[in-house]
Length: 113
Image (cartoon, rainbow, N blue to C red):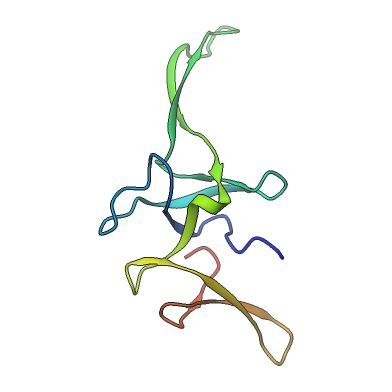
């Protein structure tokens, strides 16, 4: 079974330190997906500080904040129409193309909403 979350999708964090509340889940855009490790990097979620030293002239040193990957099971595709996370169903059309469908609203999820 393939990963149903792609780069550019909006996801809600459902578990972990960055999950937010039930009424207001943390939502962000997926920046990258690692299928082998089953991890995703979500914009402005799971921020970590990295202390870097300038290795050559012109490179900035100091404390850099960046996103760290989180496990795929801790995020859920976000349905903007229902304003909450949703599971995904894959439907194959008669012409052979596949589309992702939101279980909550029944709407087709476009590539990189």
